[in-house]
Length: 320
Image 1 (cartoon, rainbow, N blue to C red):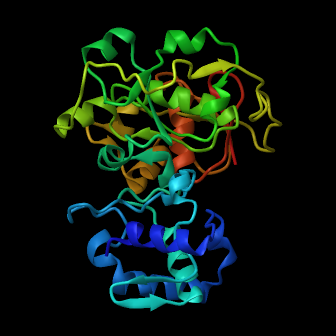
Image 2: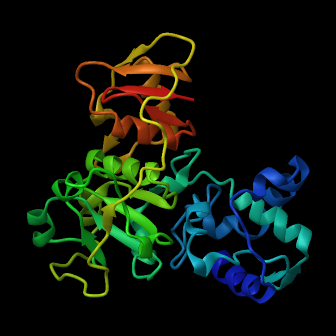
């Protein structure tokens, strides 16, 4: 079932607004009903996790909450709609869409909206409501990049004390990509999140995976993108030195190479095992041990797994 296309049209007709908090307002029986409806009418095309893309034209559904920031999706899943020859009454529509918003995608993360697959970005990047930012160097960008992307190298970003998105971009869905390591993209992701922008994600596998999947690249610079992406702005995110948790700090030793491969980030279960081996035991104060990368990538990974993260200094993370 082409769920997204059908529900978008029907929802727009109803003038109904769906928000990411819908699942929390539904009862367990409502979500169970939604799951049954999904299995009967959606799973054949979208897969059990929402990200099966073997059917041509299917849009992944894992992490749909991020894309609700796209005005074209504001009416996604109106109270009544028609699909596969039947009309869903409001209660069924609400249950189904609530369940879809709980899907964790192919890698099983609690916050799959923060990680965008190359397949999904390839379908969405031409929309004016999206802005794709290449955080590699200017020289790498000139050699080849994703079409409809704008280059913001680390050197440019570092020149701003408190970088934030330009006001006219505040409603854009931002997707960041680097060479594939995740290090540069995670740093910019944290900058944007701390500046108050929530609709931001990282391209899973970065430019390297994009090329490996034989997706289109260009050397042309888009004239439709705004020349100014970041400005100096007030810092509205988390405090730089939050109060310490009750228990003392624990050393966390992480190796980026076990968290990010050529196919992007490893799945949630593998990531959790890696963190546990490295010393992670749940909420608390952690100091990154020698050999670990800077705090940005671990913070992003923990966010994917559903934790809230504050940073205290360069190498300490407060996990809640």
